[in-house]
Length: 370
Ligand SMILES: Cc1ncc(COP(=O)(O)O)c(C=O)c1O
Image (cartoon, rainbow, N blue to C red; front, top):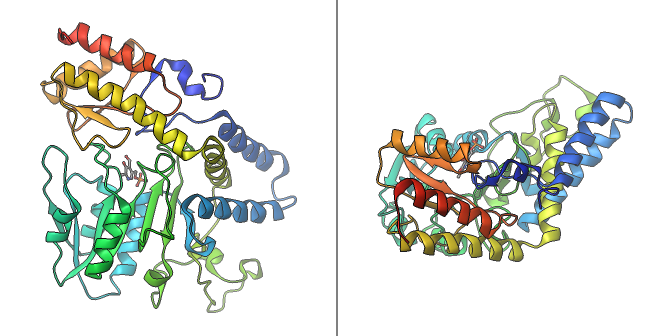
């Protein structure tokens, strides 16, 4: 595996919910495009357009969505700012989400003047009905990460979408921590919006985030941003009032980071080849092994135990926990400290050896007896 995923050469790499180890084929594709730009510049410019079509087609297939409904922008924060600006065209002003969400899901909506209702969770757990209870006649949308970044709590997107459909509110899903781990089927899950940053489990490198906007969500709304690439014929380079395109790609308003986009397509291809079900099964095997070993040591993981993110407290202050994580790094065991807790995120390519190295470290340094 080390030759396939270079980050594994650093030791026990268990920070995939932060930046996933990247497959060699993805790295090679990104390098190929950087080389191509360096060596050929604008010669054969048509290759950039072909790449764009290829990336959008791969991403659409990965989500089982129509190609015209997807694009890739810089990050989820940007995606959700755009969504907030579009949502402002409707009259309702409340946004319902759980308090544990990653700030990309929350801060854009405060910024654009929405009333953000944060539903409390207990030990990182909540039910779809907790979100449902917070919905009122003024609710514009429910926002939810399929897997919560800090606790690993998993929410079934289909259940959420059925609830939101019944309540006639938009569903905005964040698939950052679930993409490439859980299959995504947007023909079944009726979300208005999906955003997914591509540097997590997808392992596509940093600087790309998928954006899906349903046709129903877009209907009657203008794009809040525009540029020379959002028009029907960008290479006419005209300065007259433009005819905007009506696909989501029109939100790619100017020159693009082609190597990043190529990385996203290569990562989708890679995980499709491996098979998402196989990836999911392996991640659950490793994370369930870790969960059961932690429980034997009276360390209780947060969330509902249905994802690859395993987060627990070691009963120490934030500073002490950070120091412990730093000490782990010195022993080549790489995990995150998130909100004062230890977050471990094994991927498909990790092994039991990685989990056992972490457990041995904890036993030794915390005086634990399993
Ligand atoms: C659920 C979730 N969304 C988004 C992000 C990243 O956001 P952005 O793409 O805005 O940097 C993270 C990163 O940790 C995350 O966990």
